[in-house]
Length: 89
Image (cartoon, rainbow, N blue to C red; front, side, top):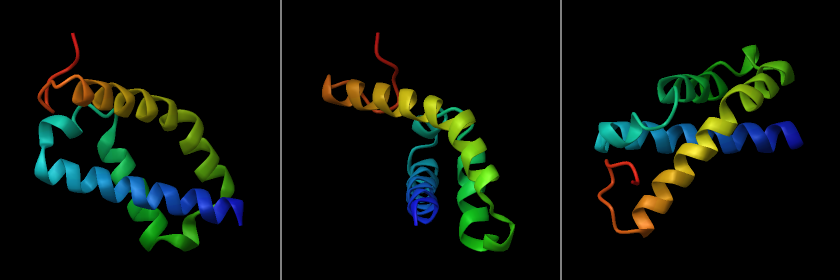
């Protein structure tokens, strides 16, 4: 159940990043390897037979820290009143 819950969260995150890339490509580019995140979401959604716990855990270890950092910086910039596409100074 835990793996299923983690996979679901990556599906939601991947979809959100996909929508961000369509609406604000500059902002999406601030997320490290955002295209890989979207591709991972697609594997989770459409290639469920190929998904195993090693793949999911590897993605968590290699991509989650950068994602958390980038989104945190974007949220901080947003609450500071900076335009979405600009990095905080």
